[in-house]
Image (cartoon, rainbow, N blue to C red; front, top):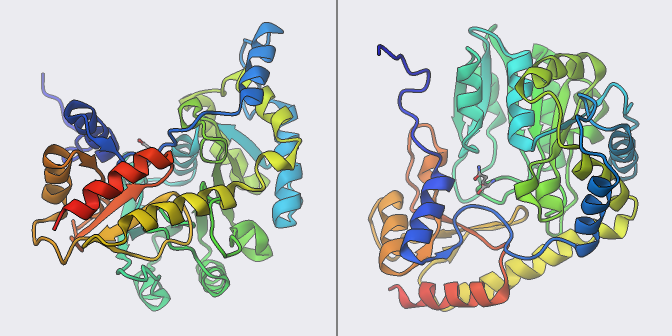
Length: 380
Ligand code: GLN
């Protein structure tokens, strides 16, 4: 059969590849980002309760009203923004589906979308599958700062969208207020949509999260993507949401309804009830800051050099003092030989830039991180 691939150079996602390799090798898996600790019993009971009560049929397309109302409340208390749950909140099957629906609904043939590399792996293919043209701009370690001068110079009359991600996966850096101000100005000047991936909003250390929702002019032209998986340790439940002004939400929903129609009902109802108690999410940053610090303790005394991590549950380590292997080879070698799996950062660069960095997920129990530390300290 004469099959023309729409994504000829794309293989299986690095997260799946490395997790599979870790399983095959019996390696400690700090590659794919997911927590290895249990979900709240209370939350599990709530899902159960709603299932038993018979809430097992399709939810309304944009999400169950109870959850959208709760989200609007939390957005107000967290970011001070009033959002209309009817028209501006859409529940999605996780952050990735929110991003895909947004791009499918808003980006057409030839539209240019600015993406900062290292970038999460779904951004570029989502743009290309929908006929858009990704414009990649590199963020350079160790700061991974955005060069707003370069951004301005790459804008053309076809530029339609800028995608940002804060706290940032994989680097762990966060955007500062001045970044958002610059972005606001550029987006206004060139009439751009901003897609802001904020799934790690509550995993931020010693900093305030700069959501686009806090900046009135920016919020008018932005969609912000959030994920319950990150906040409640439920990445496998695949539930997230997107906040955007009505005009933008309308277009996202047009795509969303044909991608998945709606998201599973009992989990939405359970989340709505669970989130009524802010204690269930307000302390997440402390929980993860302790994890990050514990992991860094384990890295001490090794030849690996940590980069700054101000948010997300990822820590980058440089191995430039250990090996001049490329990072993909290094990650594979460490998984097979030393039984510790990580993610090579070059896969997040469109041009494959190799800065000798590996990403480690610290959403893990102490014992796992302790064992990982022993491995790291043994590699010279
Ligand atoms: N967000 C997770 C990570 O960055 C992976 C999710 C996935 O496997 N697609 O590791």
